[in-house]
Length: 454
Image (cartoon, rainbow, N blue to C red; front, side, top):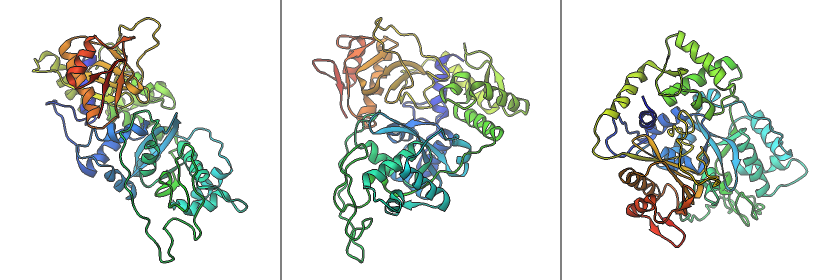
């Protein structure tokens, strides 16, 4: 199959809801749908600001944040951090709890501070989950009392280092609600709730005389005798230890890649920064081929023969290759986060060549905050973080029209906040084919360019 055929296959393989009548498209719903999506994406780091509005909502038709919280509270799904991003964002992975030891990667070197060390030792040695107020005294030790801000910061340092997790996604939502995220979040009015009083006449989550408040910083602001800071909501616990046997971990990773991508290539392995790289995965996949668990072949053009697919995938791949010979009534467009595993470009597929003004410095990449728009599997638009700069790979009016409608649709449904676009391929965006298509789709002109608002 050609690159565009794989570009059509991969989103459908990952149950992404593609507008139009996609061949073999299935629709995920409810808690089971979320589990199916998380199972396929286990261990993949995605910006926190992209997980719910772009990744999960793009796969599960009736997705609601409360569903993910329900699964986490039940102990079926957990989240892990994989490093902070500038601002209030960071890389987050989701895992099925019963197989997390196989999808969690060995943690990188990390030197915790005193508060972090006390918290980590307590969570590792005592097990179970602990509320924020139970951890404040532990963080400070015997001789000091830390502010809420310091304890929240210590918890998040451990979370980004991949050491601890929470039993709800609420702290992650509270973090990205502070703005300055990779994918701009639509502002939502907070729900005002009066604190519930205990039998002793004080708010739950506070001490008898109140607790030290957060006075600012990256992790929010809580003042006075406040209840638990939103950034520390729920119960915190140590993450399970990853599988340390390299043979078991490598085989599990190879099987997960086959399930995630349908076709495993050098590019898809390298994009995930897997320990041991493609050299290790090639050896494991070759053994799986000998055992009849997968096939090696020349499935995608121009990517060499070092490609592996499970037998059940091969016939489905052929059906997408045959689509290139069928007349279609209209193009089918799909907008994704550039870091979404359903985006094959910059991973299994190379980025296509583009006509960019020399010296502009604009190049596509699987960057946090960027968006891609594919039409019939071919990359048409790349939107850099914030939307100020676009790269267009096709100037056909019909194709651009479909891509523009998909991009405007992402903003209109609230998956990302407004986009303000000023340049395309290094030039001013006004009076270009891309501008005409975007204006027709619902963008409007400003003195500097185009704007799309939710």
